[in-house]
Image (tube, rainbow, N blue to C red; front, side, top):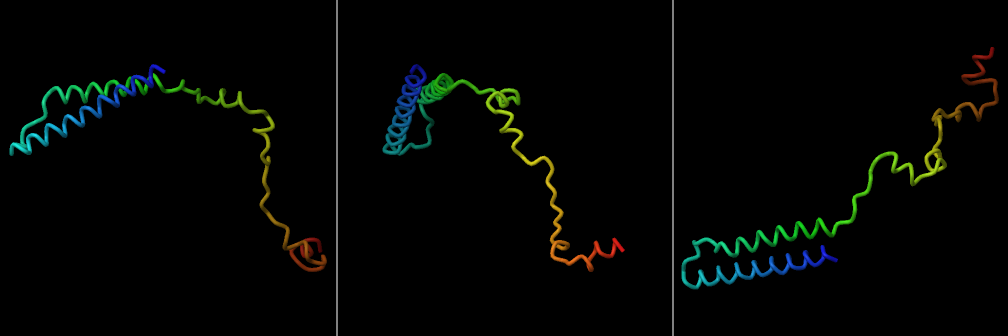
Length: 111
């Protein structure tokens, strides 16, 4: 709740600083002198809004999660981790299965 309140104040301060900047620049443009810099009060208000926004986001953020292997293993069972194939054999026997046994690579090796 405190973080949300600080973020709200920071947002209002940032919008006010942006509106003040717009007003100041439009006033200078009407006078024909748009080359001057912003007043220090607007710059300080913007920096204060930035600082409050950072503090509010840090307060509002949830607690960090542990990302170690041990913490991951606390949430899993052995069945989850050992559900994969142990050894995969990708050698096919399709060449040999359709033959009658008298010809082919195995027949020549037997005789």
